[in-house]
Length: 263
Image (cartoon, rainbow, N blue to C red):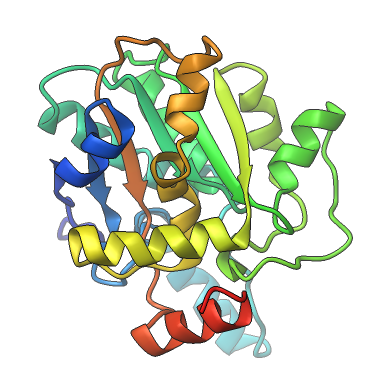
């Protein structure tokens, strides 16, 4: 069988001068917003589909032979999804000249975080801490870490709807007990404000879910973690995963700002 090319592309990583100035330490942005789908999720889903190609064909034939049916592929809770997301770190290991001081990710169900941890282990960067950022009303990881067990939120109330999982994966809960993960929660206003600033600074429009990760710089979370002694004062490059999202436009951003009383 002909070798199948991955559905995702290797995305650029570059230093952001605006974010570096604001953070007071070198900040690099991993531009997953430039994926064909506008989001990092194509890494995991694409890897799942590529790996399960012969099985999916067989399953499809069975469906036709028997009765029509459905199969659910979780967007975050499957080892193949995590393995696909780990490719992001493989690219960082090639493109960066030094080991990151920290990697910042937004968290929904935890699939991206799971993949980043797996990737860090593969490239011998297991000591690189992760800053996991959520919005209030979609803070299922933060609630679980505080409780010391998986927690199901009563509802998702955040405007960052793509972070809207009421419960993170069991694997995520396992990994935060093994890897250094700093869980941070920001308001919807902070996430949307980060989106707004990022458009001005980098001319790239992303969803509020991605704005959560960007808030690590715009809301001075990196500086706070350094002052608390959780991150080193002399910090290697901080990589913010710009996870993207295509469910956004300037008009939608304007509506969100109005809804949140920001204009």
